[in-house]
Image: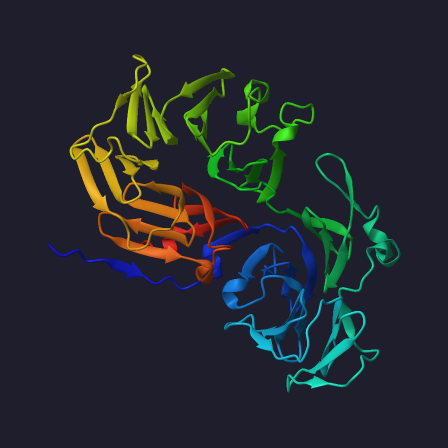
Length: 470
């Protein structure tokens, strides 16, 4: 019997995505001749939404941009962006499409600032300045004039004098530490203020009233995502990012603050910190009022309401768990074990073909009418009627780091991006940085209705599945 494999080529549409990129270092802001503002980070050009001033489109290595960006400036004459890397390489990039193009320079060295006027682009290396004619893209022996606008030369200490209405010129973080503003960029009726290690603020230039406070994700090595209390939580090695969905507001809960008087503990974690022996878990699951924290051959289970911590200790490596009613499913490197809480003794879960017995079972996905077990090569479906077996999709991220899904829809993530497929019809689509991912290194997935939440080493984002599945 032949199998028809239906592959879907996704065409990128910014409206299908919501981006929450990591903003470890904002290099500068720049803008076109109209309303669009671009935020330049150390590895991307981020287009901000004209109305909300939040990230809308992100351009990075997939568009041919350098991996380490120093500065970038929008050329309103030629309607393109000039980008310079930290090593002094010059690129030109059109945000309407296409790949960045490298400009040939006779020599390159570390860059101090980037300048532009109506005819030339200037690269200031400190000891020398290179000039490049904008239209011919050839080097010229020309010195900057008084009309040259420089990026990267502003002294943050001048903010007090230049922007008196921004007083007190510092940002108070969650610990009430004062972080000085890094830079200010004004465009039309808005002022964009970058805050090192936090994100950026947006002010109305007429009233100098703060209109947006954008905090980027700060949890490192995010391995799990789940929802609770109208928020989305990204669980990492150093803490948890909380995204308040209605407000699109990001909060950060570092483990070192849990249990303190600062009230920095997520609601589901109150009372847990003094009971835990570690925080460096490999996976976290919040299921029916119980927080499962997995680490190798052990699992800590915290009942959120009762504030009681229990332990699971096995001889097998625990990959995933699922809990419903009186039944606890544990996926391990020796198969799946089922424990009926009323009886307390785990027993191997045996399917018709013994695919879940004494072999790796990497993940469990629960739907409304079925439960799915992923072995890395095979998807096993369990329903009240029995068992079904499905082959893997045409592309599998290697290594696999994340899985999410529902009835008839499975998403796999890892090195290489995300693949989303329907096991019954073999209909599938692959997403990479070319399709809108912040990074091809996917570390966690969570499915909420028709939205797929994706965590990568570059941040958090949401993808609308309606764009690929009718």
